[in-house]
Each structure stands twice: as structure tokens, then as C-alpha cells.
Length: 296
Image (cartoon, rainbow, N blue to C red; front, side):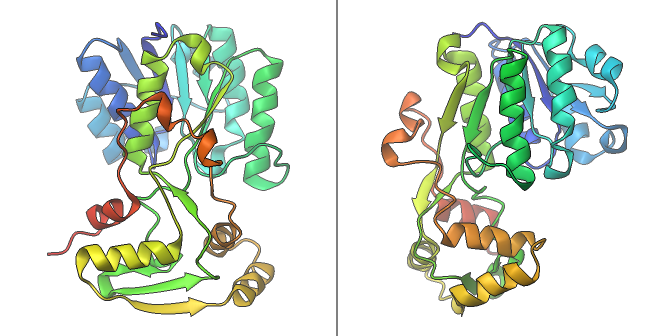
């Protein structure tokens, strides 16, 4: 076991609330002794923060631009798990610096989704630069690459209007993609950070996936499992590339192009960290979609 018992989770939104919930489950069993959720004042009254407080989390309202605010919140913490959003990635630099000063022993950056090694531009470049920062200040990290969130991303914004049984496949749709639910990601992070020995988690990149399927495979499997016939539209690869060129800031189209380029695999099968926890048993992508889109 790592011996880590005191955790801070920075952010309680899209993935952070799941990480905090899984750590709080371990608190109930005595594996974890405390869970602190860092949140901005503007988010302190949000439903997710309120629910985490009810479950036993300590809520620390912080200013991510204030060293003293972060230092106070991080006093005595063993592990910081960052789940800040893309817009707040820059705040992780000061968060890491103050974590090091406070004696934090492990930092889990807000990585997730797409592997960031060697990236230099945009949000992925920001994430990669933080790895260097953590090495400079000698604060060990655990990186988690997971693929897109299978329980969150299949929405009309990304071409999946399941309420109306309509799906638009952008590109060829044949490239395999790594998919993992937020709950399964949180379970793995919480388990690894407590159950694994330190030498197995320090300076380690974990490549985990709940499932590996192309968009075309997902459509076929969803229809077979539910008996629902989907109306499929297709946007050609050329149309998708043109859309990204025309609107470089269109996040949805950019993500769909990454999928079609094969850029959302967390690694080759032999590189996966799933085998580090054989009992993990993550949810399949189709089961995640069905659970996130229940039928009356």
C-alpha cells in the first residue's frame, strides 16, 4: 500500500466529483482518512459540492491565483488529484508549487482523455508542460490517460441525438477509440493511489480503457443490444477537415477529427494498465451509453 490517506481534489465538476466520491467511499472503510475538495467561491454552492459535503468531504474555498489560499488548503495533504477544467489548466502550476511546499507527496494532474506526451500546442501542450514543471520541483506524479468519457460524450453536440434515434458519424468512423466512464476512471485512480506501493505510482503513466471500439462498431453494437434502429447520417472526412479548418475553435469538430485520425487511443494493447488491477471490470461503451440515455 502507498500509505497515502489524506487527499485533496481540485475541482468538483465533470470528473472531480467522481474522484471525490470514490475517495469518500474509501474513507468510510478507513483506507482514506480525509478528503478535501478545493473549489472556487463561485462554485461553493453548486449541487456537486453540496452533495460531496454531505458525504463527508471537507470543502475548502480557494483562490487558485493566491499562494496563501492554496497553502492553507493543502496543509497536511498527501495526494492532490487535479480535475480542473480546460480553461483553468494554467492554475495547476501554482497549485503544484504550493503542493510541493506543503509537503504533498503525489500530484495527479488533470490529464485524462488523450495522451499528451510530446504535445506543445493548446490545452494538450499546457498539460505536457506541467509534467516538466513537476519534474523540476521534484513532485512525483501519476498521469492517467483514459480516452473520452463514455458516459458523457455521446450527445447531440458530438453527433449523437439518441432521444430522436439519430446519429451523425463524422469521418470514416472506422478508427478504434479508447472509451472509459468517469466512474471507472475515478475508481481506478482511488484504488491505485491507495492500494499500490509508491514505487508503482510515482512518475507513472497509467493507460486505462473501459472499452476499445470504433464509432461504426458502437452503432452496430448499440442497435443489436437495444433493438433500436438508428438513423445514420454521415459527414465525409473531407467535410470534417474543412469544418475544422474553417473553425479551428470548434471543439466538437476538432475532437471528432482526432477520433477519426486514431488519436484517441491511450496506447497499444500491450501498454494498457488495466492488468494492474484485474478486478477493475470497467463498463463497456455501449452499456455506458444505454445507462446515460435511459428509455422511459
